[in-house]
Length: 428
Image 1 (tube, rainbow, N blue to C red):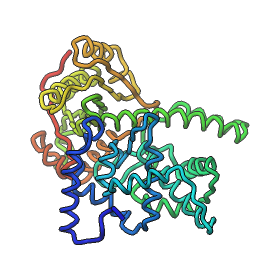
Image 2: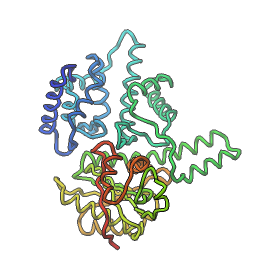
Image 3: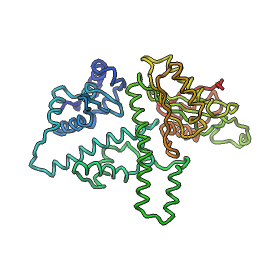
């Protein structure tokens, strides 16, 4: 087997560091711009150490089938990042001979004596490959743990039905118990999101009213299927653009910004009796995520500036200028802005005019403004706000100067702590 052998930790680290240096030298400049860490490469190879030679070959063939393009090139996805053929082989420790022999056997069919054993392996490998693509397309990573979360409209039953339909198209079948066991064994870190407190979708409220009337279950399922397909395709499009901006930051800049529920300073937990009637200052917080540069920022300002398009433009201008000053590659030609589906902050003529000026003055060739469907806009930036709100339950914010210490305590991992900026001027 070409993957990492079960050796000492020192040998594994030396092997992984050699892979990373070779990865930077051999990979092309257009596909492999993501920097994998030593821990990332070691975690990739852990699940395959117990594979037999035949299982390892079948897994490589399934990945080749899913990555082969019409022009003969390859588009592999590793941990949600697009890589080329050289990067894929180096990350998983696949030799050129092993890749070529697996490629030769992709279209060949080998007859086996034990057909039931072959079918069992076929559905498991097929389902495994489909779930990897499904999770990479729809799930979002948690900023405070290694877990990944699927959107709220994906339940376990819906994912099972989608997987079952995919396997049936290949002539394979699967039961709910087998699917559940495979999910617990292989994808325990992928969680199904629970209900959350946000504005309800208009169609979801309409569907509840339809259920109260005398409408058949078949008609309800048809309407629900149409609605699910609509907002799942919208989220899939946004996820596709995010992955493209991560792998090709010199082509696309993907920004997502939104505001959270206002905090009040000083924030003291637990609240002493002597300070219960203390006047507190309302503090507004806006967040911005730059997926192409892997940057998270929080902007704090006081209520003498009203929340609206002026705040949005100030935040966008500040971040774009900072990014252009520190960028180590050429400027991207496309800017994608993911805004909340409301007219107050994102979908208004002021933001549209700002986007037009960015194109007019040559900062970008194209600006896209996208948003998810109303009532289904919960995304990764809302998860960062959730960590902030949860941190306020356990930590104090005595003053604005103590905000940095609060964020370092609320966000447990250092790489997830967003940098914060106090807005001292706002463009009108």
